[in-house]
Length: 212
Ligand code: SAM
Image 1 (cartoon, rainbow, N blue to C red):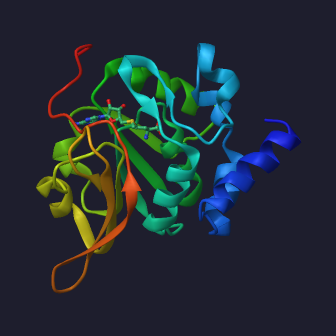
Image 2: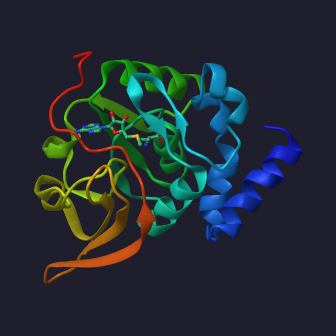
């Protein structure tokens, strides 16, 4: 990313409401170009979602920024991400948290994300091939959970794996319609729900991808 591209990238984030300096610094330090391949690589710094392998997408940078900001990650947090996709979101989370677990149902995306994390020396990310709708019971509870695929409701197993005081951000709604980004906070007494903004994500699908 050259200087001009970086200025435009950060300007687009700020103008969409990403104002948390820690999030902006993390996003400045991770080159989105490393996560986009082939034809679309020259559009990596545009504020737009782009296609990746397995019919999936890398999210729009402004949406990545807003979701990361809403998650309010602290330096000692353990974060679970569902839907590794290209790995871009997990890479940004890894700059803010102590440890990131990210789960993806497509084996090819898992393999490619691992390669990128290794090349970028992002050693606090663990990529797991599996069905993220069940969460990661062995590593639970989590301080923060981010779901980057749309569910009809916040998945019960993920809510159960959220630590007290923890925050989960999840797009909720039918996959072919506009969905709402929901922030769920686990308090001493139960769960609090806040609706943040309209979003559009590919669906959260139970089970593994066709590539195993
Ligand atoms: N966070 C990604 C990034 O930074 O590139 C973008 C995620 S993409 C919008 C959604 C991803 O969720 C896809 O890669 C899809 O395969 C994955 N996914 C959908 N259902 C899943 C499930 N049950 N478990 C794990 N991954 C899932």
